Image 1 (cartoon, rainbow, N blue to C red):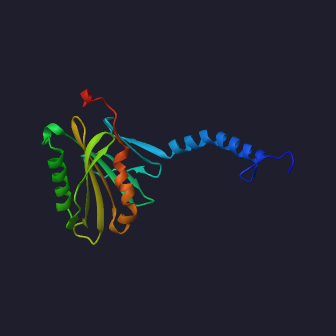
Image 2 (image 1 turned 90 degrees about the vertical axis):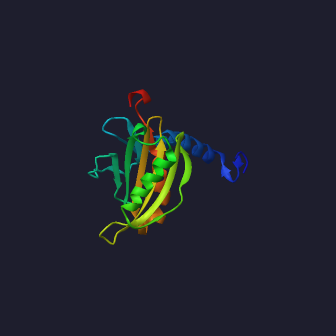
Image 3 (image 1 turned 180 degrees about the vertical axis):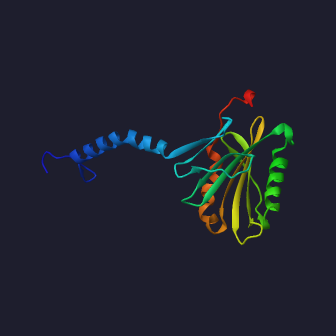
Length: 189
């Protein structure tokens, strides 16, 4: 053992090699993390939604949807809808509850969970879970509706999946809104 320094049972040369290898890989790992995300933009350029690389753009053929995306691997879907505050009440609670109720009325046997107050990316928000069956079908779905209030708009992030996957996908659906941001200054909206 003469001439060898051992730190926590690891020869010094091996420890030095491991430290140098980790330092060399750190920039590559950081680049890989940024490459694991994909940004979707609204056609007007005002909004964006950053999601994991697994998501693809989707057209749900609904005029009010500014951004639509699907994660076919997990069976999750998301829509972004933005509406001018001037066209509605100035109360986030009233607006969000009205949107929640409208979604629930579009389902058979709707079940709602109480709303949750949040702050997402510095914006006041309410989040709801809505469950039910699509009309004229036996397809049960679960939605996570997150409504945020910007200076000039209400933004809805609507994530959903089949009910049988909902419990497993809940965390992902709740985190969709964290990828939201506005891209245009407020005076341009």
